[in-house]
Length: 371
Ligand code: PEP
Ligand code: MG
Image (cartoon, rainbow, N blue to C red; front, side, top):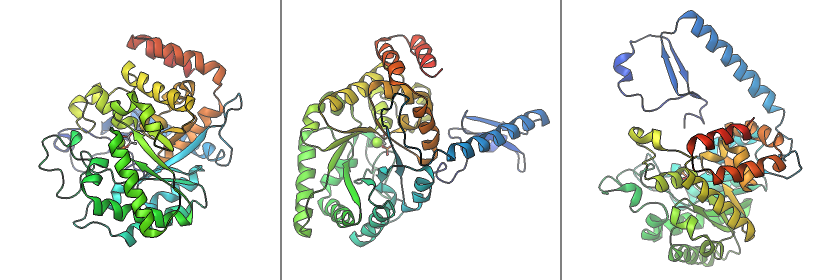
């Protein structure tokens, strides 16, 4: 949310409000996770310089808006944007994204007492589909629960991250799910819309969801729409072929994949230092999904935070990823990194990272990749 509003932000600063006096000057360095209270003039001048360099860099990157993303050896790379509300579209256009790779629809449902009706949802989805003018828009069906709680839902669950969330919740609320599916299908007439199912772990969840999509289509006398699944539960990553067989595309949700692989609650700052995208288990799952899907001819994207992390762009390219979806603010820098990367160089290094079982060695190889 802060990123969408272009506001630097830090989280998990306990007791900060008791330690900072009213009216004190603060430097919020969101990129390094640093807060400086009442900086001395030298520190302040240094940060003012960094701020203007950052602005200059952003301006330079804007020149790449219409440049197609491709590696130095000519491999095309698709760069998509993640959005939460139709209001985010301005940033999507500014960034020159090839489409919307993840529309997190739960934000239409949150912070209110009632559920949005079919027409209200249809208007929001249509607005995005139309504004993208024929470019793909991947609409994720409602992913509530755990970190994205609906008012009055989730409070009583013993373990919300493992509970009735995302596709499980939708399948348990068929009327609500059908309402959303009808709204998406109606909006699909106005652009190139695809449906993405969150948190799939079982084949029967996919089959039930596909049956609901067929039912919604019959009610609307509709034809085809591509349906994909989020791979964000380790079980789905490990049993990929059964999802490839039933779905048109896959999208790796690395935020949840890391949470569930490492058993780290992504909202709990007490264990945030253990939340590590470079853990060998995470990298093996990510590489396995990209390689298995690509070999089997199923399009695969990454739409979690890893896709927008500059330090990981070359590693993911080396694993074979050609479709990244991220917050629009991250897209220009990622494009520049792609334009300066050679697959011939990054592929062997990425394989070495996969073979490394030592954290220091992994970081050393990553530094080499990014040199
Ligand atoms: C993810 O889990 O990586 C993802 C993209 O979905 P969200 O962050 O909305 O859970
Ligand atoms: Mg997720």
